[in-house]
Length: 211
Image (cartoon, rainbow, N blue to C red; front, side, top):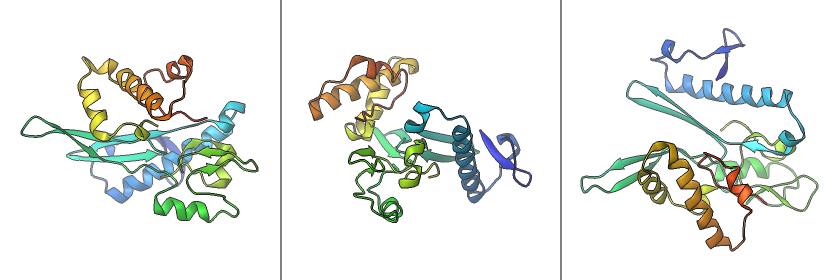
């Protein structure tokens, strides 16, 4: 990751040098990192990058503390095992979607925004993104999408942790999760996605389809 250091200059983050930093310090660091990443992407933009975007979950462990920063609707879920051997999900992040109050207020501040359920494409009567923050997606930056703070449409936290826990090894857990999400999408929405679209997800655990 990159972050502003020493009065604004950017350099590598050396976590081992910052083991006792406070939460506000880490919060500010995440904000500066995400902004710096988005600015760097903007300088290397191509046609696909102008319309495309990415999510992110960043996790730092500081002693017995875990600090998490998320962009867009990427979600961190902790799995705990109960005394009766049940798996219990603990959601650690908030999905940054347009329907949560603070994001709705920010998006509605943009004049002539037709709805808050999605961030709509500018000057076109069609939906753009079902989330409020993302890296890239520069065609929507002026219309409610920011870089600073899916699979969850069809699978619950409990379903996800049980699917991941059932994987024979960690290297196949993400692919197993994508396959379950793909089947759930087809069952819930009734459309047939091209196999290539699911293959493009590769080893990622996000299975959100955007038309």
